[in-house]
Length: 555
Image 1 (tube, rainbow, N blue to C red):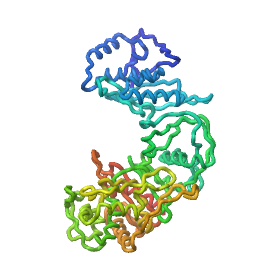
Image 2 (cartoon, helix red, strand yellow):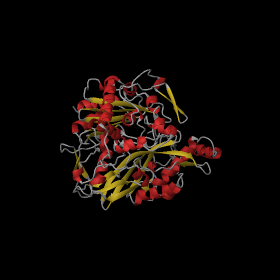
Image 3 (spheres, rainbow, N blue to C red):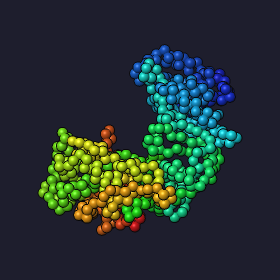
Image 4 (spheres, helix red, strand yellow):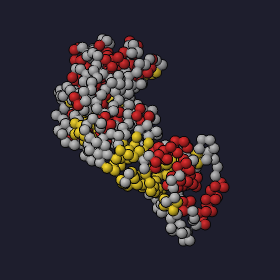
């Protein structure tokens, strides 16, 4: 919040009452109060008039333009005039619908908006309101922000409209609704039967929301009365769950037991909290049970729903393909030049290293890109896609883990993008759940679909792979992963965890991002884990310690 502006002594300090709503907005430097009170000092009025006289509809916004646009929008919203507020935005139709629904469907009244100090065109503000439904009331308070921009048509200052202006939990197309929740609450239990809450495990919010959406109707509970974010088409496509903001009356929760380990979940939460934008998944290869999932960002479950290029961790799948097609063998010589051109793109290794007279095992352990790209001319465009789908159970959009998840994407590509996909770039997309499953498949020798809720709870069918790797391919894959854990790019993170282990590091370049996303996937005994640190750099240095710590904790 900015400092309160001093106003002229002659101002009437009694707030105006408009339509039963007290129109009081406390503001910081750069956002005036006079417009909302209808009065003000002479200096304020003169400054405002001068600002309007000099305003131009092109170029950077002035402080006066930002102030005036923000004031107009906030005042109209607070006074219960959605059409007037919407007219001050870049999308009148969408703003009218959501602001009208705020009062009508959200049952929110007595709205007080308090603006803070503007920073350029961005104006933070706080909201206080009352949720009122059939005699039940509860207060609601939260912080939000708006941004003033020039309108596309005439260049006049308007509020850049997004649903998040109304509430930060809203995505465009979402709505706020208060009423009897269509889905009863659930009490999520860990594998030992103890209730899991976000107070204890902060990053489980999206998981608990997903469990309620999936099992609320069948877990034996009854609905309460709540203010909820109801997801629109775009949010549902992104597999975001509805979210409770205020509970006016408690429903009776049903119970859903998960496979999460309380000790390992606590360890995962602790590890990701040390690093920004980190996500990790730990599972059991022999069964597919998910033992822990955690994200630094508590608002989105990147670990299950992220869609990111996996970088060199994808070389596990590519290696299995090369072994099967006799294009590589663990201890046979394999090219690792500084550069390799394919499909018009010139590929290179990290810091342009090369391995002269090296074996494939050495190239895998050091993560030589050209060792894999050099084999692209000998592969069909669909080979990698089929390998990922048929052996590793990925990219078929048929996993049923118990909450929303993304099963990975390995599209059929040609020329340079196909070559890039061999090293986890191009169109390939994964998340830590997918890559933990890849390591699990190597350890178990067969794909077991990961799951958070036992299929016996609702008799759902788990995904399967259509075939398994040959004994020779599996043996070689385990050998190169073990060598990488002992002597390669994963050695520092995996130190002391052998000998029944294997690992692979990865770094994935992202457009307009200075540092690569750091990936790490590994197994140890009957545990497998994968993690990513976005914009972290090399996976061995960033995601590696997180994954290794969980493998050690689970032993």
